[in-house]
Length: 102
Image 1 (tube, rainbow, N blue to C red):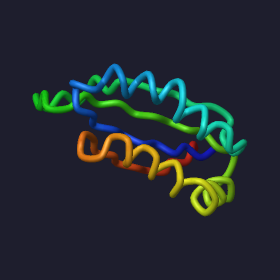
Image 2 (image 1 turned 90 degrees about the horizontal axis):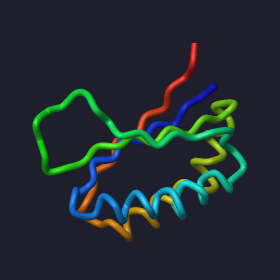
Image 3 (image 1 turned 120 degrees about the vertical axis):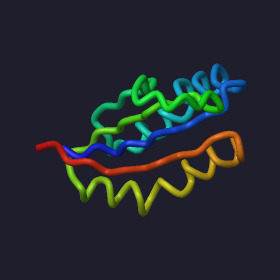
């Protein structure tokens, strides 16, 4: 399995609205691509770097193969990432990584 992990640092002032939008709009839109088998939305507990400027979350999307991830990247990623970045502009940071289960 391949895991597409996005760690998001979000402005605490908009955290509740962001979480609602993620759960009701963005994550369902990502899952509607039909490429992912499951997802998890997690609050990052550790490491706690003492920086309270951001709330930290990790969203994990699971895919059967790297080919599916490449399809997502080519056909869907730009549109979905643009929707997020347009909506939240300079109020977040995202760190993306791709993992493989062993």
